[in-house]
Image 1 (tube, one colour):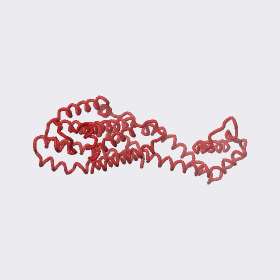
Image 2: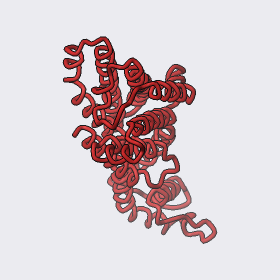
Image 3: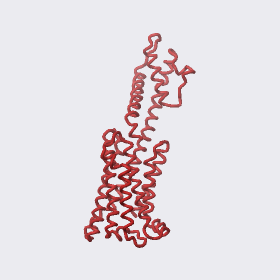
Image 4: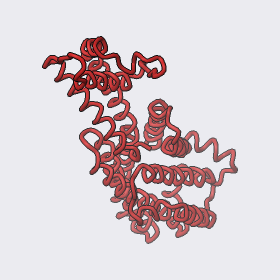
Length: 330
């Protein structure tokens, strides 16, 4: 049931990212989410039983699913790192290809040493008493904890330089990473308890497994989906504000052009009037030119002056936000 819910969340995240990030060249987060969605789907019992039966009935699909999850987590970490200015050195090491490949090699080696028997949907419950199985699980979850810790550091730094609602997705990533680390610690405790035969401790720790698993993925999904969603909402709001300011400046702009023809009336200096930002910028410039030109008589009403100043602040804010957030939006 847990795997089905998480798979559904991941496929929903993939759909959201495909819609919200469809115009972006960088698709690392989308590919990572797709990889994790595939991994979670492989862990749904009917899917697992069918595919593992086709693969020989020796639980080989467990390795495929787990390596897919490890790869997805690696790609997520890399995506977060790319979106940050100068991530800490330890974070870069944790999210490096070398650490990822070492984890993959270690997990694969441990898996091949497990006496896997026949297909089972309770892999660690049935086989976790084997040291190789415990090592296999511990390698996976230790790697997840390392990557999530690095992600938390990078996302936390991103949250500190963000303003208002822009900080919410990064904070959700920090929360999701913290829950994921707690999940990894819980699994390691369960693995060690199983190996030494302390089934009481294993059962006690297992109580926290499903809630942490669901909450970690839920927070991470919200965080990753929230970043492009927030940008889309802000872009829509900004476009509406730009249109409104341009509409309110239009009479003053026409009056300015009537006494002092501007560049917008020069066929050789055509501009994209369909672009609201470009149009508003041209309006502001040509109104200001008419105001400071002593050769013409042009007065701006106080109400129009207020709109003009609002438009200038609006345009300046866009330039500073674009410069300051270029890395965050990669």
